[in-house]
Length: 119
Image 1 (spheres, helix red, strand yellow):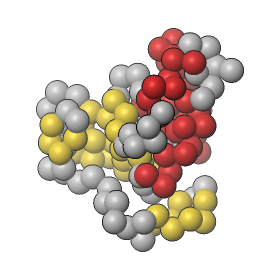
Image 2: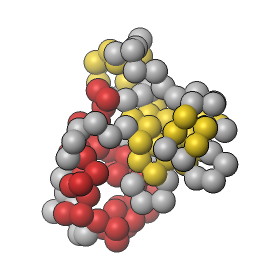
Image 3: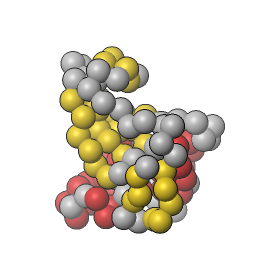
Image 4: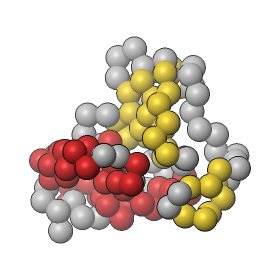
């Protein structure tokens, strides 16, 4: 079981964090870079993205609600992967305590560019 620094919730261990070789939307993960408990970056041969544990998804949903064009990314509540080029900005903004201030500032600019100004 994993606990996060931002909540006392124990994450359901049935939802395993991706590991090397795990199938991602872009192919098998060649490397994994942990960001926070329940949040990992997976790199593949051609692309990559961030996986978010289902119990932490609400944080991405809160951030996405501030950007008009991001609603489709979180509407089902089932999404777990966010691609590295655009969508991962929402994850950075959902977990700013695990990123340096420059990454957060860049994510704010990226999210505003791709998904419309923040509300």
